[in-house]
Image (cartoon, rainbow, N blue to C red):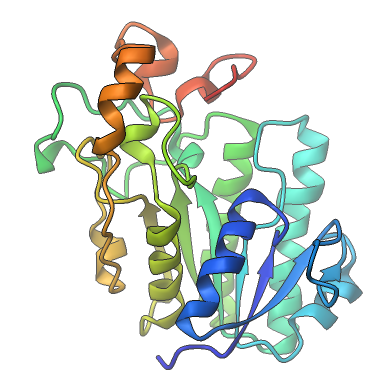
Amino acid sequence: MPAPRTVLLTGAAGGLGTLMRDLLPGYGYELRLLDLRPIEGAPDAIVADLGDREALREAVRGVDAIIHLAGISLEAPFEKILRANIEGTYNLYEAAREEGVGRIVFASSNHAVGFTPRPQGDAPFDPGALIPIDTPRRPDTFYGLSKSFGEDLAQFYWDKYGLETVSVRIGSCFPEPTSVRMLSVWMSPADGARLFHAALTAENVEHTVVYGSSANTRLWWDLTTARSLGYEPQDDSEPYAEKLIAEQGELEPGNIAHAYLGGHFVSDPPLWPY
């Protein structure tokens, strides 16, 4: 499909939103920014809560697509997750439906499948051992549960209303990986922008779920559905591996935080850093 001209970027003041604010305009997008708090240097940004349905409807009016990054990105009490990530995402989809927006790129998370055992053995892994996109959802937290809900919501809005979504199960998108676990799930900011661009422009996505990571040597999951959108990751976490392993040691299968995709999110309570 033709590249959308105007894209609403929710969560624009967050870590990932800040990275995408800098990178996505290079693909020709005019970004309309929305966040719960003001954005320095962006006086025209919309300051609104995801619970404000009138503000959301006004924010989506006239845009060609939405990248939905807003919400709580760590574990929190269920009541807070419910309001921000579950009810807030529903409110955004309703606003998009009411205003006739045709596509949303939804920031899902690897924590929707966080209790899936990680591949074992030496990297690079046999491609047959990579975790497929259709692995059963096994959320590791209320946060992961909210991302599972978001994926189901996206499927419902496609089936019932024809609103397309690409749900991106993001690993960790930072300028560089900061843990040994992250060597397997890292997505460079540049690859993040490539993936979001592919998700915005691919034809006939209906509701497509993809994993969001770079082409890491130690990759844990199958990027086939992401590549089917036209995504071609260019980066690899391996240049950071020697230093991180020397500092932190290799992952230990007997450590619960190392045994599953979700890392420290699977512990109770979740341990940080993850």
